[in-house]
Amino acid sequence: MSKNKIKLSVVLVITALMIFSLPLAAQKLPNQLPRNKTVYIAGELWGPVQSFNPLGSASWPIITADMDTNLVYEHLFAFNMLSGELEPLLATEYNWKDDLTLEVKLNEKAEWSDGKPFTAKDVVYTFKLGQRYNVEWSNFWQYVDDVYSTDDYTVEIKMKENNPNRYVVMDKLVYTWMLPRHIISKVEANNNNNIAQIRQNWFNEDPVGTGPYKVAAYNSQRVVLRRDDNYWGKVEWGEPAPKYLVHPIFKSNEAGNRAFKNAEIDISQQFLPQIWDTWKKNDLPVKTWYDEEPYHYPYRMPSLYLNLQKKPMSDPAFRRALAHVIDYEKIAQLAMTRYSETMQPGLLLPTGPQSKYFVEEDVEKYGWEHDPEKAKKILEEAGYTKNSDGWYVTPDGEEISLTATCPYGWTDWNVSLQIVAQSARGIGLNIKTNFPEYPNYLDDLQRGNFELTMEQGPTPTPANPWRKFQMVMDSSNLPEIGSTAYHNYGRYRNEKASELITNLPKMTDKKAAETYKELNKIFMQDIPIIPLEYRPAYFYEVNETHWKGFPDAENPYAPPMTPFSQAAIRILYNIEPVK
Image (cartoon, rainbow, N blue to C red; front, side, top):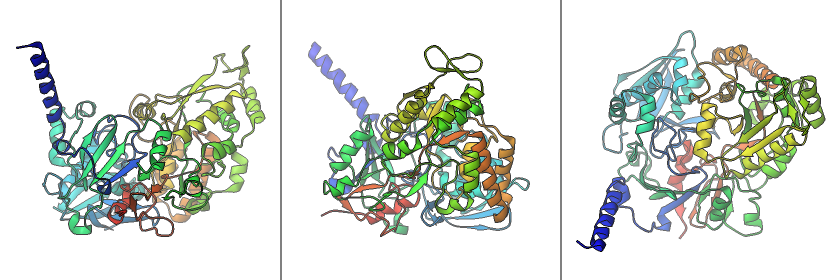
């Protein structure tokens, strides 16, 4: 055989192996997706696919850090952050049978994408995965005694008599994907029931879910989902309008924003500065939730997380000095381009439902503001001095050199951290910035492998504001540095705060209000994290060049989220292609 024929044979074999290693759906994907059947999305995927493993650090649409999508795996209910209501999805209703027992009725029509029925056994199995392994919903079992089925389509959740928590139970109804028992039980067996092996070995290339879409293809440039035309929900609410959902992988906000302005993206969750110029100056069919300031629906508080297990972050005086160093006005103006008011101290929003717990007198007494001179005074009174190069050193003589991180390409966060570093260096605190790829950032965040980093806080949930304090200040069942944590990434420990957070769900409304105020006071005294800005839960940005009918403040039929997150899934059923 000639060398050319050998080379050709090798190429054919390699090509065949590549084709047949793809999911079955990917082999049938057309070369060119029809634009009037395809919605393009930006802002949820920032690097190559890591896996689709719902028990590991997965990529879109299986993002385990948020678990708010309803495309492949679904929740029992979908949360609507506008109304605060839980809308039926895999479950039809819930009822409190008594003070400790919640009954959940399942939709008997629901089934997995491989045709097997979805039943109470799947629900019980899913929740009990959190009992066996450290996963996103494991904290559920701090407050729950048992989950069991009373028939094929009824599940009961029994809370612990000595530690009940309705907040967490309601939260997990909308933020725990239901997983296929018949698939994952085999994965467990094949990996010796070892969660580390499951995360390492199980890529889950062709996920079996109950949702309206399936993974069709993925590569280093994009992930493609195809509508499941056998989706069980068709009998309930029809089928989504787009046949395909595509998420291109952009290296930065700038690249994604260019694609959005060019109508290559239909809906974006990226930060786009001065978005009003797209319609005022460029006359593009772009809209946000509001057509005037603040343009977006405020919800989250991106914050500077401090690793309290490392010096000098372990020193409260250093944390207070750093809080006084940061120029919050500059962050609101330059980083957030006025999508945010200037940050006020505390963990509570001064507007909206949480404002009833916000105490201005406490903020003035225990809070902080941008005051570099006060920051220097705090440091020097605590024994910090400067070396010959003008940099502060710790009281025991160690030079302070810290790195602040957040994902590469998240321009609003990148600028926020640059302002933090610039502010700190202005008084002699040596802080640099580093912007890793998102998967590396997430792994470092959860394992506590950072000095300073940014995190945005909990997603919209029926458990707020309790959830906010729990995420930041609760040290119950908190793993040590190096192990994966899903809350309290800086490993803050305060027994009184944890006790208050634990007892809150058992309190009357009046007592709970007093406790939130007390927790906010403790937060401002200890400063486990430093909130930097107010941010919408999602940067809701729509280009209606190819698809129309997206909701807004004038037509709020769905919340301002990407059209697969929680109750925003209904967006996919209401939009239509532009003729």
